[in-house]
Every structure is written in structure tokens, then in C-alpha cells.
Length: 442
Image (cartoon, rainbow, N blue to C red; front, side, top):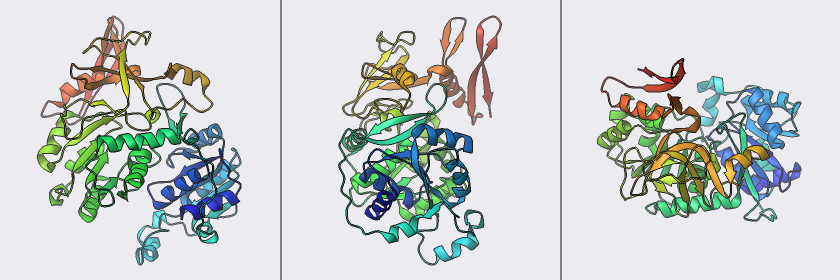
């Protein structure tokens, strides 16, 4: 199907270097479309389908996308955007396209809000019709390791979203680094839950690319609500469970949690947001599997740090640098002075998975990528054993009376109180100290 769809795209005029926008949830079409685009030497542009029309207009124009692939429910919006962007063709997918009998036939009755009764309309082509139309012979390609593979958008530390440049080398190196870190996967046999959206770098690399590279069955979950995650765990018996902290918290607190057997799970990986130490402890006690905390950015193709698999894990730490990855802690003011062990500063990273910059953003690229190092905008420190800890975002740091205060440290202390479920510390103006701390608790 990848070859068929690649031929369809080529017939629509997509050539090497052209940008193709994908606005899809976790459904089979996003995998087929991604690899078809890559086979042509074109560039996958991942967009969040839930974004507003204004946000999508900006990203489609900024990326110079020529073709958009989205759910049929989004087609009316895409047709409007076609008039304001460089989009020449729209391809429509349906969430039911790959459902087995009889679910495919029952879908319009059971999921009325997700079913579009009318055809996509003039200006939109049907994904399944294109797949049927072309042969499955491999397309002729000339793709090199250093060619651009994908643009994934990130908010970064300031301003509007930026398209992160990821080459084929970045993507390939990252999945090989993941393999070196996690050798216990039974390739061709193990199952992984696909809770991260593939339009996010974690889903793109840790989910889709890793599953294909290592022969994993990827259970694609379009909306990873706790009840759905538990249902998929009971049905497919996954060995690997990556997710964001809110998923683990939601699963632990769901009424069906006690009905689910987690004995199949070998390991869980948490990323994209800080994981509370208490959540990690509770999961280990009640599930029996460890949650390994990871750290990375869109600019690092997903991961740059992770706790050693099968080695020493430190609660609250994001672990040690990935294989072939260098990391330093430098002063916040100049970014040139390396900080002593235990002293917080900005985390900077160098490695084969690190992007070269932002698309059409020379100023932001120069600020963030300096002398081969990625300046993350995150504040952290390294302990005497080489484990790294994230203290806060540089932009979230509170300066009170000349002292640097990191809200996440306050949150962690508040989380330890047995009567507090959620906590968030922020900085507010103070006439004497400049800023002071205010905490919200639930």
C-alpha cells in the first residue's frame, strides 16, 4: 500500500523535496502516507488535526506544503485553507476505511459524530480510491541520508511555532539509539501501545518508526483516554507502554484499573512532561512494572536522556544521555560557562539525532543551535553519577529578590502531601521582590 500511495502522490506532481502535510490521528493511513512521502524523497509535515484554522494556515504556509492529507471531517476546513495557502490537492481519509467486517458497516450507526454522510466534495480525492488505482511496484527514488525527511512543529521557548528540520539521518540514528538502549524487545513478536499521537515527535519516532524498524505490532489509539488504554491492554496484551504522565495517572484512577491484568507489560516509558515521583511509586506498587522517565525534544528527534534499562533508575531523574549523545550544563546568562556538578543551568545537547535548525527561521536557528550544540531552554543539573534532573523551563524560572526559584521543585514538595492531588506553582509580580511564588493546589 505504501508503494501504491507513493505512485498516487507522484502522479499528483509530488517530487523530491516537496512538502506534504498530514493532518491525521493514529489510524493506519498516517503510517501509509508517511512512508509513501518518504519513499519519494518528499518531506512529511506533521500537523495537529485539532489545531484552529488560523494555526493550520500559518503552518501550511510556513512549511510551503503542496498537498494535504486529512480526515474527511476536516475537508471543509481544508478546502477553505486551500484558498489561503499553497495547497494544490487534498486527499480525504476516513477513520473506518480499514475497519474489519462488520464494524465497517456498523460504524455510521455507532459513531454518528465521526461519520460524514456526504462525499468530500469537489477538490478532494479519496485515499482508498487512490490506493486501488495504482500498482504496488516500488517507485524509483534517490534519497540520501542527509536529505530532509520531516518537519515537525514545536512552540519552543518563544513566539510562534517553528518547523523542526529532521533528516533521514536524524530519524534513523534515533531508532538505532533506542535499540541500543532497549535490547530486550522480541522483534517480530512484541506489542507496543501507540498512545502518543504520530503527529507528535514521540509518536513519530518512539511509536511509528521504532515499531517498523523493530517489527513491533503497534496498537494505534486515536484518543488515548484511560478507559480505552485499559481496554486495549486487556485485548492486545502489550509488552511496551509509552505515554505521558497524565495517561498513567488516569489509568491508575480509572474504575476499570482493578479489572486489568498488567502481567504482560515489560516496561513503561514516560515523556513529554515531568513525571511525579509519587506516580512512579504508585505504578510500580500496583502494576508491578517500572515507569522509566525519559527526556527529549522535537529538536532531538524524540529522546536525548533516559534512565538505563535494567540498570540504576533514580526517581525524579530523566537518566543519562542517550548512546552517542553529549550533554552539558551551562550558565543561563552566557551559555558558555560549564556549571559544577549539582549546580543548575541550561541543558545543551549534541548528538546524531539533533536537528540542524528550524525551517525558514535563521534568527531562531542561530539562537538555539550554537557551535553544534542545541540550547534546550530547560534548566537542569547533573549529579555525581552522571544522572540529569530537570528543574524547570528557563522561561518559567521565577526571580525573587535576585534568587532563582524553580516552580517544579515547589510542585514536587506539594505533591508529597497526602491530601494534595494536583499542584502548580507560578510567579506573580511583587512590588518588593520583583516576583514571588503563588501555588494552586487541588
